[in-house]
Length: 514
Ligand SMILES: Nc1ncnc2c1ncn2[C@@H]1O[C@H](COP(=O)(O)OP(=O)(O)OP(=O)(O)O)[C@@H](O)[C@H]1O
Ligand SMILES: O=C(O)[C@H](O)CO
Image 1: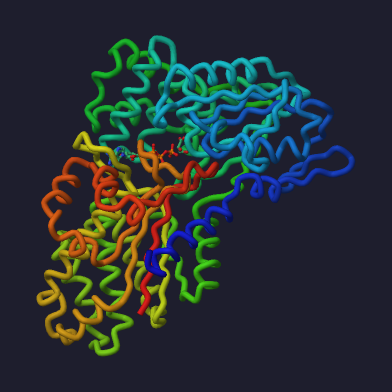
Image 2 (image 1 turned 180 degrees about the vertical axis):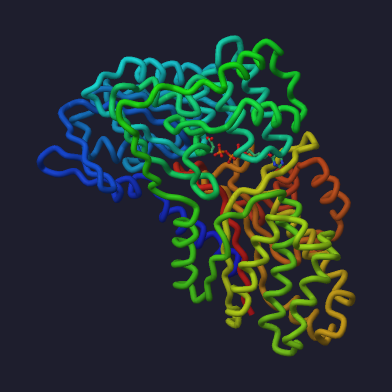
């Protein structure tokens, strides 16, 4: 592995340390000797009156932190974890709940989709919440993946039905906002319904965010946050993704009838605290990149939209960054090169796309600072893939693959992109000489239904695999990025972290070293 490729792994590993759920929770909570738990200015009197509800890919460590701090006060708990969590983490003191007869641990949600096992866990959550009394404090711990792990469908809808709705929306490229808007309408625990069940107890919700901008009504489908989405919005999403037929007309009608129902005011307003998010992971990664001698820049923690556009932009941005450090360019024309490059990649105007626009704005700020010979550019978020083929892959692997293909397209079109801007021969030589690495990785360690977290590759990916060009393109058209990278070089291209026990969306990383 080249030095720069091993730097990718080291930087990513470091970023995961920064979002260790156990540490984040310990930092958020203060327990005083008078049995008071203090959280962001609010105090809770503890007297063996705490119930725990936890769901998500990262809550194992969050539960453990609560147990280590105030375990004596916990009288009951239900923890809903993803399938395989116990096998991976049972020996990790910072990532697995302390075994206790008071705390029931469930696993489910194969491939991040509702199933019978997640249904069993969700029923247990329902029961725990339903029996709460006024002197109790219910601590709700949430992280990404919680929607699947709290899937209790409304009456008339089966869990198989619900799985099909979720997988269809996800595969057709619905955003997390759209997906969770639908989930809220078809579930008995989401969209503030869990907090209603918990009444009259006090509710404290601690959240590791895996959604852009940390929206409390969307993360985990907002089980403790009032839902402001309407029945009309729900229906519009079903129509947009052509899945109206997956839900019977009578159920849709009853959802529309009840969606305007406003619950009675809560006895006490629940507190919501975000304990960590994608930005923290990027900060952690940058800290380490700087230690390794890179000039580090965090670009954005809000990358969304289609991977097709995002991949085009990253590739164009790589070219632009290289122009910034290329010693012989005509400085004023780099912007022109960027525009030509985006055109070659099929993006005619940055104004066409909100995603690209937001990246484009921050990119200007960053580029004025790129002058070092060792640059690390970091961003994060969660773009979407419209899965059309029957291949095996994930959005991170597909993003990396598309960046690799785009970098090759740029290389083939150097003459038109760089005409009048640089000496072509010298620039081509420079491009081949320097190390460029792009990586995209899911912080939960699982990219789509594959056993890896993401993929990384260099600017020479296509040329290194010259004889497989057709295979690469056909694999992409089948959304078969995992199979492709496994065949071309599992170790070289795929990033394997195992399940990480945390989850704050994806990290995108560009390393350039002269
Ligand atoms: N073959 C494939 N190629 C590319 N992307 C795929 C493929 N199959 C599924 N995906 C994408 O994987 C995503 C689902 O991945 P995953 O289950 O890791 O969800 P997640 O968003 O990380 O979960 P959560 O937000 O609940 O933590 C969807 O965006 C889907 O489009
Ligand atoms: O579980 C969910 O709803 C997603 O991971 C977003 O939080």
